[in-house]
Amino acid sequence: MADNGTGRAGSGTGHPETVSRTDSPATDTATDTANSRTGHTISRRRLLGTAGATGLALGAAGGAVGYAAAPSDPANAKGSHAPLTSLGADTVMFHGKHQPGITTPMQANGHLIAFDLAAGAGRKEAAALLRRWSSTAARLMSGEAVSGDTDVARDAGPSSLTVTFGFGHSFFARTGLEKQRPVALDPLPDFSSDHLDKARSNGDLWVQIGANDSLVAFHALRTLQQDAGKAARIRWQMSGFNRSPGATARPMTTRNLMGQIDGTNNPKPADKDFDQRIFVPAKSDPAWMAGGSYAVVRRIRMLLDDWEKLAPRDQENVIGRHKSDGSPLTGGTETTEPNLQKAAKNGEYVISLNAHARITRPDQNGGAAMLRRPFSFHDGFDAHGTPDAGLLFICWQADPLRGFVPVQRKLDRGDALSEFIRHESSGLFAVPGGAAEGGYVGQALLEG
Image 1 (cartoon, rainbow, N blue to C red):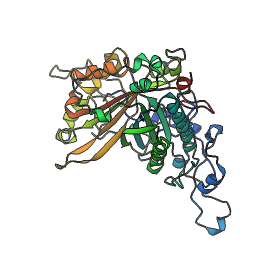
Image 2 (image 1 turned 30 degrees about the vertical axis):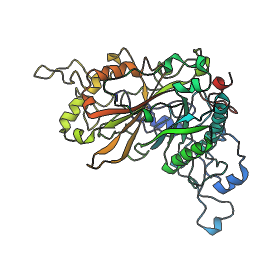
Image 3 (image 1 turned 180 degrees about the horizontal axis):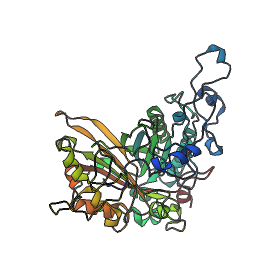
Image 4 (image 1 turned 120 degrees about the horizontal axis):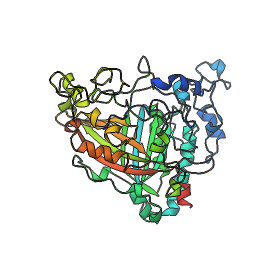
């Protein structure tokens, strides 16, 4: 975990592929202007009768096409349908320079799932699967029905659904594409604080799903899992959540399960060097990763029983920020830069040398930065009532050796928060750029 952002994806996206609402104070007005709303939507039944099974997203032309509830008034039964609420009508574009789900504002529900290619499956089968998955994702994200639909998301709109695809280190050997494997995808180094479960780590293929409606998110998960068919089998799957849009009186940075405001210093697309830090440049090696990014995925368990025994003031000292509003202990507001040189009357630093906020500052790590876009998770209680809960950590960067690795090495050497968390699984995935209209994610790799 790091102080440079675990909340909404930056303080605003500013990227054209999303017309969703953001909960970030900095861009609330801008994204309200950018939002796309549909006055009336097509019912799911009509879509099933009119949409072709292989069609792609219609949302790229503008408004969202969604599932609408059948009218309760029989007088309106001749084709008049109730409009979706703003939350249901929010749409994110599938096609574009970058894949969705990276700069898209954080959604309330998320699923992460890794697959391994089936025995005997290779490059040909992987290409067919990515083509199939991309077509399905585009339809679902625009609110269309899919062939053989289970009706799980009936009556709901797209609800800011995003689907993102990535390739693990092992994918390239399985498909005979070792020469196209990026150096940046080399396995992450071992960290002393790791307690990793190999069965819940890595994988040939990785899929990230996010939506502001839980049924819409599950529907996408189930559909993509069925689409895998005999080409791939599930390696692991994890589910998470965040605060729902509109749950607070004003847009705010989210809180994690420790009760801390979490995500204050996330890089913002408005930053001059944002693309340089987060996305692979156009002239890249290998060329198929142009416009892509690298995702580090970690299941971080929070030892909440131990954390909650600390007095609030002690919790604040561990983090280096006030729990009430996220402001640094040295004063100001949430966005005020901490004064790391400020000393208390006893001569000690106000923000201690091992405080999480100090250690994770980019200027304390050679400028290393990553866009963090996680979900919280809770997978029940053990026999002693101890919660299995924490953070599904996801961070994005142009090069993990310059983003995640230096920060995690610094944390590994003495972060006060390390006593209260445990890294239980890990994965690194190459996420190529977005698919063009009529194409599919990873096409340049698999057909190049």
